[in-house]
Image (cartoon, rainbow, N blue to C red; front, side):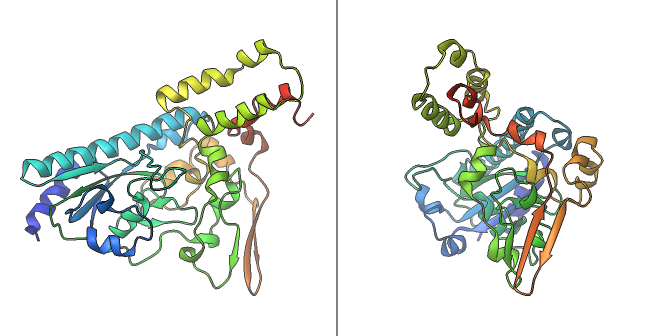
Length: 332
């Protein structure tokens, strides 16, 4: 085990470089509880510790109505977390250790055919004591709720691990705000009264992708299938002049709207001692969950949520798959 001062100095350096919080997980202990192949040994053997850092999304990004600009800001926060992880890795190597940053943006098709991170950082961060994975599988910290991004590295330095939190941050269906506001209904809305949030936390990833990857390779595939399968003669000029192609170009060059482009569940997550009160003062955010819009139906065996919202005019901005429906005569 490395001397305690190494971990203390590492944490101090991480905070100086902009991290909100930093935690350590033991590689062997973490690997023992991971059921997938997303473990450090998949990358390289001999690593002893995982270091995870968090970085919050600025409250100003929550004040915007333009989701694509929010997406740009989310990537800036993620870039900051990953840059901090890289700087910590270099700091460790300057002290004679081996270290490797692990990007949360990289998707490995050998781990999962739809793509999977080299480490599933939300579970890594929970194991390292930084917070709790909530109902919608977003990672929550006490200070910023689900409005955080993660950076990580693995190292051969044997650092003292941190213990997971001894409490759940997410109240699950007792709150359910993220579930009812989700445009594609990708988050659990009902569960047995005997189940805890840790029993039911889940996400329909295909449904979520309709909103979070609103103009990406996923939406491109859907759009091309519609156009190629159209049962009417298409006006080529109308197809080519559609704004979709320009937005797709921006997305592929700047990640603007390509992924991490839905923030409904982050707007209204009530956890966050340092930012939620500021967010709730933002005029646009007050429209998210009007009073009386959430109904809790509690039976002897089941708890269900029903939502009378969100405002209908906000839904189409996410589903860019629809951009050419009027040309192929879908829905009218």
